[in-house]
Image (cartoon, rainbow, N blue to C red):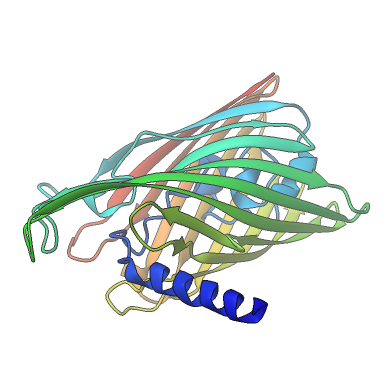
Length: 328
């Protein structure tokens, strides 16, 4: 009898779950944008070198390298683009300017970042569609040994989906969602000159909608290394693979390779350069970055510039980021 009741509950639960429609999100609705103007200027190669308040995004194990308590803001300043072309409408955040807030110490952190702030009208499927998703993260870091540090993120997800459509029948709906996610990070310090890191984001992570099936967030794997070539010069390299649950028009997500350099000038001024892409031999597949940083009494100001291409736009697009970190 108990077995029959258990099987019946599983059966009817499955019917209830599968009766719901898939949510009207995009394949990249959980991406947001990469965090931090410092890593942004180094080709987004930072998983092994992270040592600032951007650690919850890149690798929470890097929190143990913080020298003071910091709170950090990041601003997505602007886009420059070919005349008449709307670039930000293709992005999950559509140019939202305030994109990160964190409070960090060497043992833990609290952070917030938006994943989606998307709105479109008169598309093929919808008269109107809005997607808003935010991520709130509690981070921990543990010095497991003198060489190894371990980090973990526990995240709460909150979102809303709004649609209006005429076909196949007129309808409008607003759905709310709540979810959770776990991230794992590890940094191995071979010596003061060489580090290696690995970070697994959304392993696992889910969001549950009030009117749709739940969504699993894409798994993102990053592996990297950092090397102090000289006292004033640092080199970083990352490998990234994102495993999307939903496909981008049938296209597979390819591995991305990141390279970055940081050059230290007198008076705590930092110059940065980097590049990343799926294929360095194809011009339009490669993005280039430049950065500038300044530190004074643990007040940290960073700027970065990224040059990249989008399908359907002939000329390159430029984006500008700014990060400000203050001690507390």
